[in-house]
Image 1 (cartoon, rainbow, N blue to C red):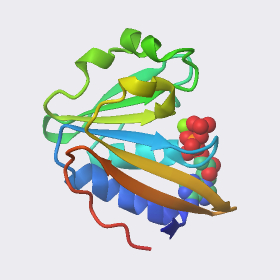
Image 2: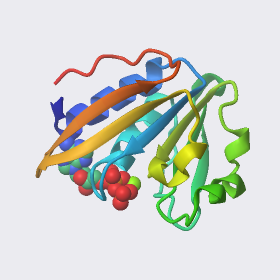
Image 3: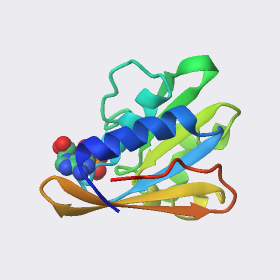
Image 4: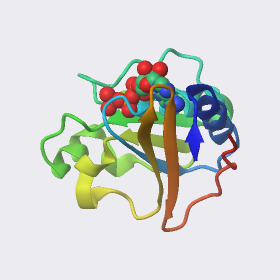
Length: 147
Ligand SMILES: Nc1ncnc2c1ncn2[C@@H]1O[C@H](COP(=O)(O)OP(=O)(O)OP(=O)(O)O)[C@@H](O)[C@H]1O
Ligand SMILES: [Mg+2]
C-alpha cells in the first residue's frame, strides 16, 4: 500500500496503541525510506513522550510508554557482524510488555527472532512510500493500514 508520511504516522500511532506485547518489528528499507519515522510513530502511540534521537553512536535506546509498556529502538546499520547484537542486549529482548523496533534488521542475519513482523518501506516518490507488512512466525494482529 502506498502512503504519505502523515498516513504512515497515523497508522504507526495506532500500531503502538493497539498492538499486543511483546512484539518485535523488523523495519527494513533503504536510507531515508522512513523506518525512523515509523518507529517514532509507533513509540508515540505506545505513550512515549520523550524525543527519540536516531540510534547512531548509541545503537539502542529504551523508552517507557504507558501502562508499563517498554519501547526499545535499535539501529543495526553500523554493526559489522550479526554477533555484535549480543552486546546490545539482544538476549534480553522480547520481555513481557516490550515493543522492539529494529532498523536495518538484515544486519542481524539468522539472529533475528523467529516470531516477528517484517515491515518493509520502499521509496515511491518524494512524499510516498510503499509499506509491506509480512508476518513471520506467530505474531499479534496489526491494525489495518488504510490510505
Ligand atoms: N511517505 C513517507 N513516509 C515516511 N517518510 C517520508 C515519506 N515521505 C517523505 N518522507 C521523508 O523521508 C524521510 C525518512 O527518514 P527516516 O529517518 O525515517 O528514514 P530511515 O529509513 O530511518 O533512514 P536511515 O536508514 O538513515 O535510518 C524523512 O525526512 C521524511 O520526512
Ligand atoms: Mg532511521
